[in-house]
Image: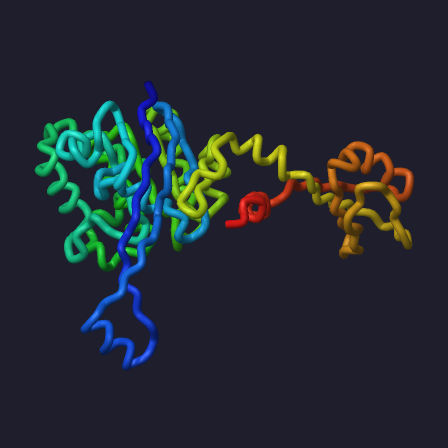
Length: 327
């Protein structure tokens, strides 16, 4: 039995419909019209203990709705969710002791007091053993580099500092599952790397299962081996990131340094080339020519001093996937 099981889950929201203009606004007070939006339609997947899964999709695809149902905040209209043999919204009091949740755009920290005060409040809420709590807190402070900031009111922290405190707060009770909804949104490069390294560390050392939703594909590439892509409320792809790369990563970007000049390059599989400051830049299609064949071809045309080979950008791969499924 998988740790997380989602079977044919659906969720529909009733949304008020209103046209623009003062007349339409006044009319809506008398007679309000509604439309029904299917956020999730017949979604199914299983997640094993210790996996890091990237849950991706365009805006409005249903990612946050799924996370809220998995965490017990929302109740599905149809279908069944089982996490550690518990139904999140029915067994909520017992269930929340096993999960940690971080919403990148919503805070669980009290705004006007230091983060450490919120940490202490969380200890009381979960009735944590004081000695065990202090040990866990100090480990989180050290790993997430919080020593200089946990005694500063949260409202005075930068976004990156606050997010590190948010993650620490979600892990004080040692959950077995961590739901992360846009955990690196708006963070600088240094803060992003701290968060990514920490997530990878706790997953490796403590086998914490991580479900990660994000639009930052660098997060997915660094952390997740498996992705579930959702679009129009349905699961469109569920598989390994490597399989996705093999299917869509057919372009290689090759830059060579050379002092020589040549007027033209003609080779099957060569899509584009341009002269750059210290040589040439090429884009090739690996379905038509291999990297080694192309380099052998180049070596007959120019004297290569240095070479750099790069894969397709992960964002471009995901865009290709979105286009294939028309989302």
